[in-house]
Image: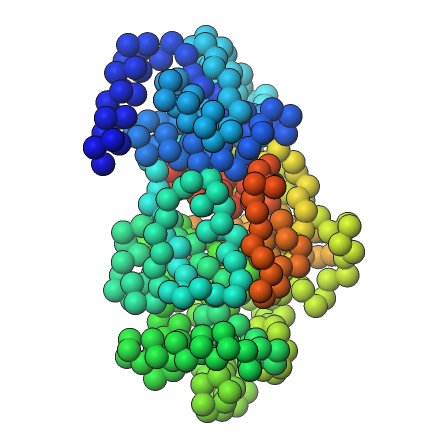
Length: 421
């Protein structure tokens, strides 16, 4: 803490002496930036020092404008982030050009580094989580929490929550057919049952539902929630099955409710509607929401396109889609993408493969808060499987798929304007 305070004093003195005579521009276009992912980390690092940053939406790939200071320049150099030192006059000209109604650009002020929580199991899982990997790579700090902390309302301590690869339905990821004899599966099931009982629940599905409802309350109260892969659809399914047993005996020890499909309440979900649940425990699928088994796209042509929004009128989806390309490589997961006609009409589809009728990247408002769902497991590992080695992000420092995750990390730091879309 002492070092942080000293650094802050140095920066403050430097800025006051120079009277903002110059700025640091961190370009985010494809041609100028050598490490897009660590650029977000430098921006977060600057916000941690209580300095404001301007996010230049749609300007050179969503660039960042920072106050100039030697320690910020040095931090960029250490992390391998490309930057330009520009004069006050040039910065003013850029901001003036951006403000023109003739261009689809906007300058959004980032005010405070959001406090980040990752909802993740206590033990090591046999897969890797893209969000924790990119946060670590970008050197953005986060804390981990799980069921016990959520049920104790500790989510209120955080501005942004990520849901690690998770199954909120109590069916252990639907891994039963392939992995029911694997040591990690047996241990995960035992640990989950023990934790549920310790928390006062007779079934894992009941404990997970209670957790999902707490997360829902967090978002409704003004929180920001981001989920990938199976945490997206299993979260909504759990909420819609409140009071309904959808688990077969191998998961919870007793049979499911008769005709449970007709008891699903879609009004309780965040994003999805009209889906059909997968009854068989031997099918690696939760419901018809996921497109994994339905899509007919060759690996070489598997891309999704990002939607374009008005930066001045719709800054929120514009922030979330900032990138140096509008075409992003697809990637698989237990939940790869979302069936387009099973997404609620008030949810924005920000990334899609239109020819295949699937959505990849969606966003919505719930109460006072926001949520983003991103299909797939790892943006730089097309078919990441259980036990595969983790992705080395040093090999993918300009990954557009990972940039979408980091857009969401910075999103809570922004001064919000009401969107029109």
